[in-house]
Image (cartoon, rainbow, N blue to C red; front, side):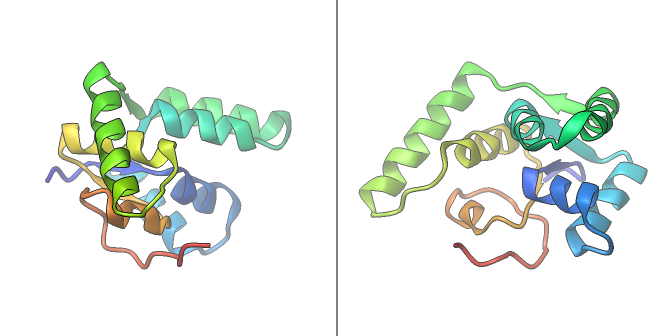
Length: 134
């Protein structure tokens, strides 16, 4: 695995909105070490949740300064196959998590997240405490 980290939406939210959050601290380290990565799904989720113009401007600054890994056609296939296999075993996960995992796998990077769904997606995770599934 690469030392670069694909940061999931939950970790970015902790960084942007929380004071003293463990995930936020890990994001701050990744930013200062220039190891932080984004992907389009995470960008869309962050923009969807932006509260007002100030947060949107902060996000646009972030997007301009953190590398964004592209989503390729193979990632859609990989995500779909993973979701189908999980569903056949009785597990239903968010589509967005499967795409983030597919991008991370293709680039051989770990994901920083608070989302326990990623444990089912056979992807490297940054060693952080995960939140329980709702």
